[in-house]
Image (cartoon, rainbow, N blue to C red; front, side, top):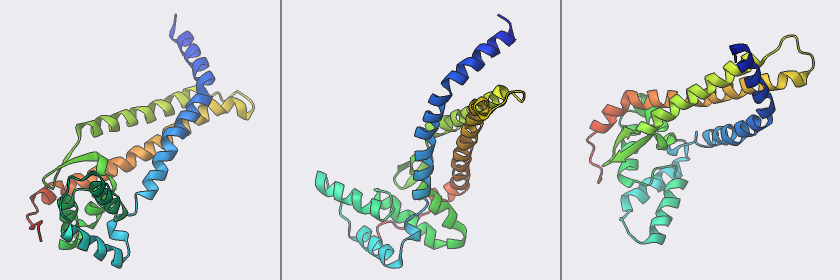
Length: 205
C-alpha cells in the first residue's frame, strides 16, 4: 500500500471520527478552560477582611487527626484560596508581602497551579509527570492542526466538507492555548522557585 492510499484511508477514518473528536475536545478542553478561569482568583485577590480572617485562622490552627476536623480545615482553606498545608500557605503569604513587586506574580501562579509541584516542608519541586503531560499536550495540539490541514480540501464545496478539517484545527488551537498557559505558569514558578525554597522566614510566627 503506497503513501497516498494510506493517507486516503486515514482521511476517511478521521472524517468518520470527527463527531467523536469534537465530543472529546468539548469534554476535556472546555472544563479545563472553565476551571482555569475560576482558579485565576487567589488568596491575594480576596477582600482585605477575608485575608485577615484567613491569617488569623492560620495562626490559631492546631493540627488534628480527627477526620471531620481535617475536612473542616480543608474546606476553610479552599474557601480562602490557599493550600491545605498551613506552613506552606503561611510561607507563600509571607513571601508575597516580603516583596510584593518582585514576588506577586510568582505567588499567584503558585496557588493557581498546585498540581504542578509537590511540597515538602514548605519547599516545592516540580512533578516529573507534569513535564510528560506538557509534551503530550504539545504533541496532541500539533497533530490535530497537522491532520486538520491535511484533511482540508480547497476544491470541496459546502461547509459540511470543511467540518472535519476545521474541527481538528480548532481543537488543536484550543489545546495549544491551554498548554501555553501551563507553560507560562511553569516558567513563572521556575524562575523564583529557588528563592522561595531558600526563604527562611520563621513559619511559626
